[in-house]
Amino acid sequence: MERRDRAAVSARRREHQAERRELNQIPWRQPRNPYAPTEILSADQIESIHLASLRILEEIGVRILLPEAREIYAGAGADVDEGTQQVRFDRGLILGAMATVPPEFTLHARNPAHDVIMGGSWAAFATVGGAPSVSDIERGRRPGNFADYSDMLRLAQSLNVVHVLAGYAPEPIDVPVPVRHMVAMEAMIRLTDKAYFGFSLSRQRVLDNIEMIRIARGLTPARLDREASFYTVVNTNSPLQLDRPMLWGIIEMARANQVTCVTPFTLAGAMAPVTLAGALALQNAEALAGMALAQIVRPGSPLIYGGFTSNVDMRSGAPAFGTPEYIKAAQIGGQLARRYRVPYRSSNVNASNAPDAQSAYEGAMSIWGALTGHTNLLIHGVGWLEGGLCASYEKFIIDAEMLQIMAKYFEPEVIDDATLAIEAIREVGPGGHFFGSPHTLERYETAFYTPLLSDWRSFQQWEADGSVDATRRAHRIYQRMLAEYEAPALDPAIAEELGAFIAKRTEEGGAPIQ
Image (cartoon, rainbow, N blue to C red; front, side):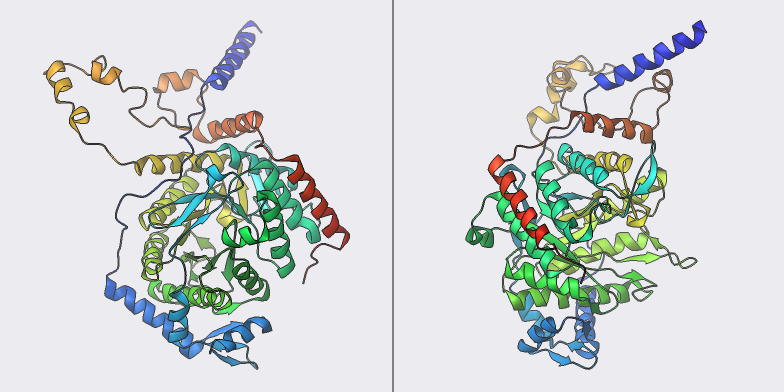
């Protein structure tokens, strides 16, 4: 009994020691990639994909399921077949539309300190979005709900390496559908002050969310029209189809001068050709068709070129991520986006069913492909699991560690007399060490990256401290972050106006399923 008591006391002591350790986060700042993008295709090869995309649009076209969108395309000179709903595009129409897309713009946050730049060499990391389930290693896997959605917003606010939000993580399915978009957006506004996201699921949902963002930022309609403050993702229904909710989103976001990220969901071997070149030609054609609509509606409205091409497991049909094909597609997608001078989106994705080694190495490969491809917006940056079907608390922290490492990797090296350290080398001399040298003592506290999650102690120290692996450490860190979370300030008058807007729209029936 005495031995068990001593063991329990030791365990509690180790937990308290762990709790006292500082959570090592890098400061909030938007990283800028100083390195040349990895370009694995030649300019001629990129041009071949571009020309193949134009042939697809001219000869085959895209099925457009919204009559209003077909009318807009027809007014711009596209060939519309109302019987098949197929729209074919002259290449001059497409290239003229793409010429008006801004190559760089600012996405404004509720807190101006959290504004981010889209385009150029800038990168912004976003949360997981759209997952129907949620998990942690203590409570297991469960359907998405508002409580977990709110907690993941708190984590997103608490993690400095998260720059923008990216949808519902997880989907709060316990909130009625007609008002879910408003309840979810209100929580996003109340619990975070970073750049916001809303789903394009119907015209009214988009309009409601745009008005809520205007209220949250305290803007006049005219100023909101000048400042991109909200973004959505439009997924094409690959192959070669755009459905009504996505088209409504493109149209209304363009009219409001807000940001649309057009992202074809082209999985090679399933919704796209099995060859990577064919899948990318299809991705490019679908992206161009969607972006052209936005520019026809409002030339100069902000857009992001979304790349999400990966492959499927040909034995089961299940999506695969972090594969060699995914890495190549992420890098080539960046080349295509730069071909049109448009900001680029990619993702940190994996197909693992647990926050384990597979989830980490597939995620690391996805991150590497995306960032060496010069993505400007990394969606699903933290928390993605199960091919997007689950948002994982532990994966939030595992991914945050990997993204912190990349953000530090982007910081340029200083080469000067002080860093070359010739006098320190002279002072220590042959056979000495640098631990106690003045050069080291002046710099040791900030010389190297300090991890949020990794444990660099010896085996004996790690074992004495409970042999806690990275997943369990991530579990403790996310729990501590939630315990220490502080909500960002929100003007009571803004909160009241938001509440009144939601009450009014709820009384009107919200936005029913269409």
